[in-house]
Length: 465
Image (cartoon, rainbow, N blue to C red; front, side, top):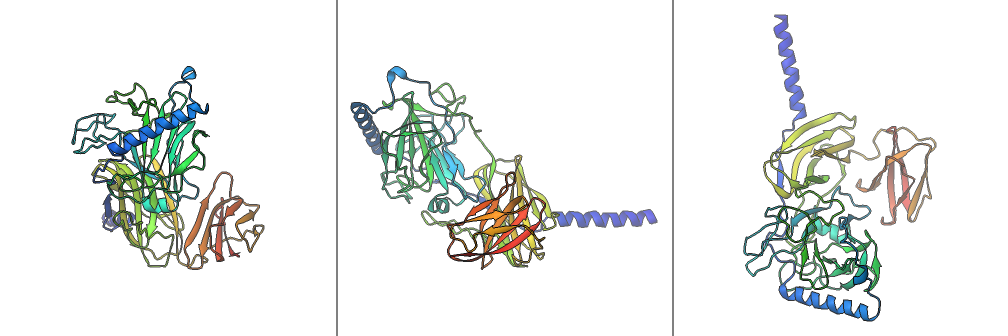
């Protein structure tokens, strides 16, 4: 009898535990498709005009004895680094997805072969075959463009042989538009095209100037023939433009025998672009309207909170582990979300209300990568804190930068405005936070919440004037 009672109690405990660990919330979201119309990045006419411009520019540099490339001193082909970079202050873990590789099948339409013998590329009825790599910004490409959060950098060192700026950068169609772009020739004579840049963002350097590998070239935009912010990266072996280069090595790449990447990224490269909290589902309006992201890191007790994860290269048969972590670092929920489709980009959302005050964490783990997002429930000043008796911030009031003096190692800092919204969030575990640039903030009162590596917290009132 006692054993039956014990078994019954144990069963109730296990049932209750499992219920506490698995949320009862319907999932929202789904696939995000970039360039669903498969619009070509460059028309045949525009490509011809670009080539003519580049050839004239190179000849002009040669006549001025300013051309860096020399046939007699031709080097080996470059090895590219990734041409996109997160700008400082980006809140997202990753900022891109791949919508199309080079098409190796010259037939059309819908006769597609990428370097990996797949069909992750496109063509159209007019005979256009995609001749570059399209890297679209994700999530919230328009918002990131508006705030200059995704930079285009030189994949290899070289000389700027041409550049174009001043063109409309919120294109949404195929109207023979001209793009903003920079063209760089390398020491083997090869030439890289960086297209669709944001208007006014191109490097201040001039034609004939040299750029180092990793140097800023511009901001990802949607100029030219485009349906949203992305980089079109196209490479040729020389100034005749008769031989296209696909920088990816693969069984179906017959253009070049080896990879042109320093470290070639996987054909399908699953990852987490962002883990975010929202007051409502994000809205993705039609091009070119900026997304309404409804992002927030500050919520009231029992307020409805939308928890979302944004993925690239979602793979069928994999799963995302999701955790909602209470202020005491125990799990409220911990579950696996099964992925049943292959998507180049996707987002998934769950809705909860929380009745415990303090700093929470929303965490996702996918394909070995973990991203953690912190947010606050309740009064941001009510989080239990231990006094840092020897911690101070100066100057206060401040204009641009505040300095932090403490005997503790400050690993996290959040700046909260008077409405309870987190406007700055920093984390630096190894070296600690010694100063914070707040030049972007408007004048007014803020609250700075500091956390040490021993989890002590302190709130300091700041005044910007």
